[in-house]
Structure formats: C-alpha cells, structure tokens
Length: 286
Image (cartoon, rainbow, N blue to C red; front, top):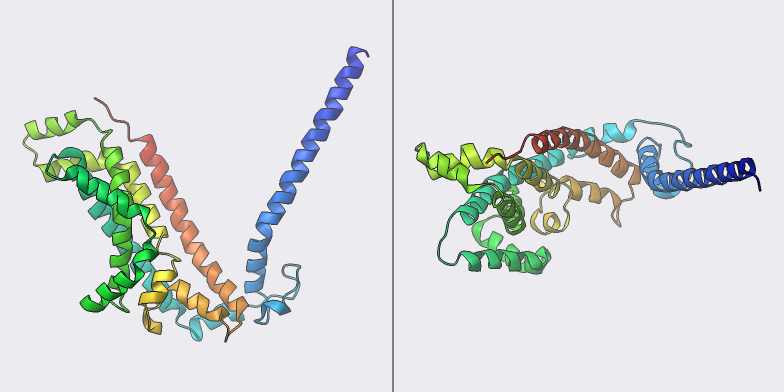
C-alpha cells in the first residue's frame, strides 16, 4: 500500500470517527434537552392534563392562559415572595454565622476546640430528616410552626456544620502574618476579621452564599412538615398542589416552573461572574 492510499484510508477513518462522535453527542443532547423542551411547550399548550399533550413539542398550539391563571387564580406571587425571603435570609445568615465560626476555629485556641469541630463533623454525617420529629417539637415549643423564620432557622442549622468546616479549611490557608500585621497596626480581632480575613476568603464566601441560597429554593420535605397555611407556602409546595391526586394541572405546574427558572438563572449568571472575578483577584501575598 502506497503512502497516498494509507493517507486516504486514515482520512476516511478520521472522518468516520468524527461523524460517529457528532452523532453520539447529538443524540445525547436531544435526550437531555427533550424533557426541558417538553416542559416549556407544556407551559404554552392549551389544556391541563399531561395525558392530553402530544409527544411533539408545541404541536397542540400556544396559549398564555396558564401564566395569567398563575397570577390571577393562585397565590403564586406570595409563594415566590416567601421563597425569596427564606432563601435570601438563609444565605445571609449562613455567611455571617459560618464565617464567624470558621474564623474563631481557624485563628484561636480554646478548650474543647477539637471536640467541637468533631461534633460538627459528626452532625454532618446524619441526614437532616433523621431529626424531623425533634425539629417539629422544638419549633412547636418556640412558636415557629407555619412561619418563615422557622424555615430559615431550620436551613441555617443544617448549613452550619458543613459550611463552617469548608470556610475554616479555606481560612487556614490564609497566612497568619496578615493577622499579626493588623494587630501591630492596632486592629482588633473583629476588625481583622472584617477587613483582612473576609476579603481574602471572598471566593469561598461567595460560593457559600450561592449554595446556601439555592438549597432552600425548591426544598420540599421540611416545607411540607412546617408550613401549613396557603399564605406561608413556598414555591415547592405551591407547585406540588397542581399535580396531586385531586388535581391534574400539569400545564400550570410547567408554567410556574419556567417562571421560577428565569430569575434563578439570572441570579446564577450574576453570581457566577462574581465568583470568577473573586477567584482571579484572591491571590494572597506574604
């Protein structure tokens, strides 16, 4: 076989493998995106039952009635507001509590320090729903049932063990010489924490804020356990009410899910840029 024939054979093999890869990834993409496209099409499709929808997206017409019904016939706006309050409050409090705790564990020595860190690690091992009965009883005693602040308290308590370990590990990498230089200049421990440590730990703080915000956004189990009244329900409970045994409003469910996704994606894009910027500017110099 001449060199030219070998070259042509290699080119044909390369084209075949490339075409096979393109076909494979095209099929995978269609399989992954089809449920999303189907959900979007269902939100704009007339009717309510999932059994009445065709397999071809947007094949049964387009309507905006489901979106109008969300704002006129349901408490969707209140559900959205409740969820936003819970998620934003949980994110802010988690950042404050966990960064303070991490700073203390990272920079100070005190009795039972290792025992307390180990206790946080052990608490993180157990699933949160193991203590559902205890959580219910505690909230009942303090009047936190069917309240938004009760949900924030639950999520905050669940975030503390893991996030404290996470931020503490990051703060351990920040040179202690920065703390010593701040103390020489007369800075207090709190001022050192605010002006020196937090700016250096900004990438981890932003990551913590993002994950703490997204966690409660569509959480269902504890919301179902604690929140009873329709006025205090979150988006997860409100959307679930559209597809229960007594109701089959699948298209309304899809419309509400799309409206949730739009601001959530915008928030993620904004915070992602902040995270990348922080990672690029968080170099620590001795």
